[in-house]
Picture (tube, rainbow, N blue to C red):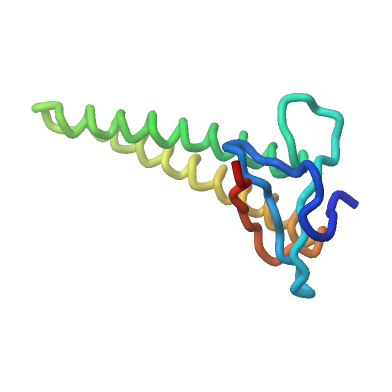
Length: 122
């Protein structure tokens, strides 16, 4: 299992912070690296979640810019534009729902009740 009790070595997340978790029994553990990847520290499932979230947020931001463009246009909104925006928002929401369900599934499988970030002293 990729959990280590206490503040063990490793388990660092982007931004110089160590990822910890509170288990369902109340124990605080450090989430350690559980794969051979060289592009991230910490558990692979948590890295995958961060990538998925970043991609979803890029989609949301692009959609937000499109809405601003449509609202700034002086002409009346066309029905196809409204439908496209609505479908894009639904797609974003569905993708985010799937991401969060997968994250929750991983947390439940590991007995994690809450994810915690701890600042690493410099």
